[in-house]
Image 1: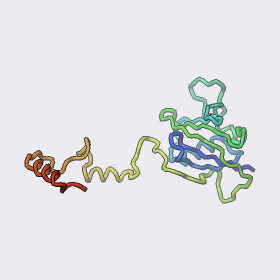
Image 2 (image 1 turned 120 degrees about the vertical axis):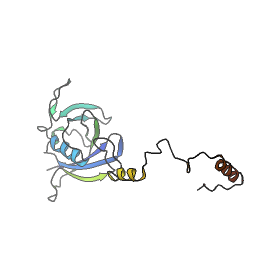
Image 3 (image 1 turned 90 degrees about the vertical axis):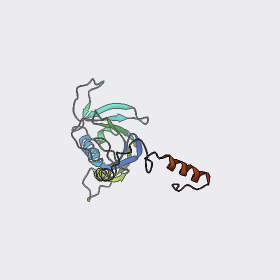
Image 4 (image 1 turned 90 degrees about the horizontal axis):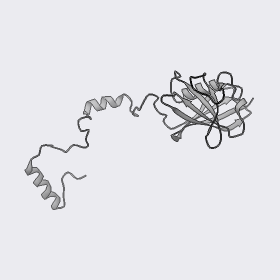
Length: 191
């Protein structure tokens, strides 16, 4: 039984990807769930695959369900279509679109075919993770919830226009002292 390894890139950043191994007899629905899980997305939204060529042009659609839109050709259904049935060459490509509102687009490329199945793995399985995936519902800092605590503790919203000056009071004698210090070649605030 053939085991296929797909590299699933985030369209905007090819340094962010997941390698997913899956049996050729499994369905596109299994691959869809593996991609969503590997990027830590929920599986509540619309999704579709497109068969693709080397130039990443969209071909025949393999859809999660039939959506209310015009199709040039009736789509194949993910739950009924095996992955092996859609492999045309050794570097087959697919485009995967998830959540038609957010329009998350992933480039899916076949990178390896193996005849050896691992008894230790449950297929499909993520074999490699590179880069930090996007947050499904907007941006979230790497610090996550901790950033809100830091922001509150140090009140980072106060100086939103840029960096504040130390001792913001406008005292003309302070300005003169700073100017004299700068002329002499030493500025106490320099770092």
